[in-house]
Image (cartoon, rainbow, N blue to C red):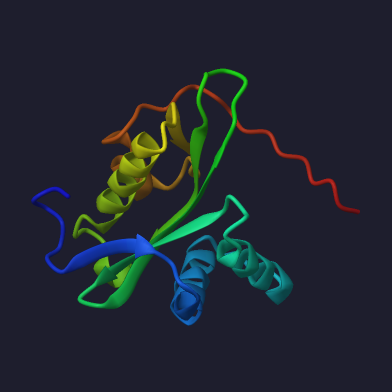
Amino acid sequence: MSAGVARGLAIRDATPADEAAWRGLWAGFLAFYDMTLPEAVTARTWRLIADPAHPMSLRIAELEGVAAGFTLWQTHDSSWVPAPDLYLEDLFVRPDLRGQGIGQALIADLVAIGRARGCARIYWMTEETNAAARRLYDGFAAPDGHIRYRADLAG
């Protein structure tokens, strides 16, 4: 971790005991994006995180023993490189703790995990208007010029 990271910060894999803390952080993440999800979706996400056979993983950042943020991520094979990619799906830091290097530490943590697992790349997306996140992300990588397309398949 860099010198700018808050003292007392620890990042670790989530355990079953982290569900309530994650749900509190998840609610903050959804509120930031002005989103609501059915409880069934949140419950399913936690079940996937808790399933050691599923690739979805959760890292919890704790500051002085209190949940401060998280990364939700997974690895997957790619047709473009000879090793898996690590996809950072969601990153969140509590608003009252931002600016202390926690987000930077969370990404650096996943970079280290990806390297240790032999991943070829790490990638993520954010909204164009999320200037604060983009400043953080620009310290790790440049945008690659891709535009995301998404079509809902349900209903």
